[in-house]
Image (cartoon, rainbow, N blue to C red):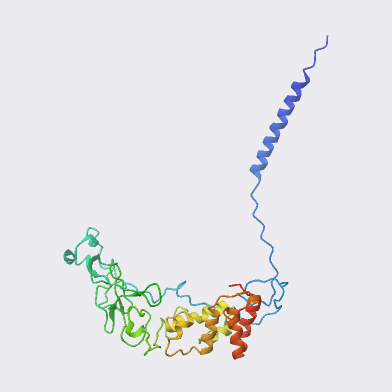
Length: 342
């Protein structure tokens, strides 16, 4: 008698289990071997070759955009950003360090001593004074300076200011006319050259009204910036310019021209805005035209279709209609091409 075959449903169930197991193993292996792919770079927009270096890329099919722009230099200029890559020389500083002459005694906590006891530890502690006249004890510098007097711009010195300098406090606060006398906090006085008739780099109307405060009788003042000649050893002034008027010739975009003019203003007079330059007694080497260009470039852009006299584009166009200076063609081209880009 022949042996009976196994029930068909058990064979089918076994086959289904094998197929499912193979699918699970194969899927896991494929997931493990799959490397994450980097996202594709977006396609490059075609930009017309006539657009100067530094300007935003604009599709050539944009209606109303000229195909060719003015030819301008594309040199790599270094801009003066006093609040950026360079140290602002108008910020007060501490006394310069001297040679390492002693080991700092960590056993004396000078900041916790009274002024009377501070004098008992002359090698480690010294007496300072705040702007409100309150004296306090502090630790001496790890490398004590060898200077016998504090130079211009020195903050909180333990020695007297050098000859011709005075110790003053006060900084602008809030509005242009408001001042913070720096009383009741931990502010310390600064040595400044106040009283010589020139508003210097470390002076302003709050700490030296004698030199920096305007009045009806004296609407214009003599200002001196960090670099009276407009340049410094650190190439802070824009390369390729020997006068502010060359900014319009050497720079590629309105923003670059503005930064160049601003750099000259900072270096010569310690001022940043065209409205402030109106108070300068002798603006040379700035010309009235340079000041007008700077004033226009300080304004915000508007769309070319909605140009107004208060916008950058409207101001530049009005200046061109008044002066017919061909150097403005570059700025006018940018205004019509990139209206509202700022």
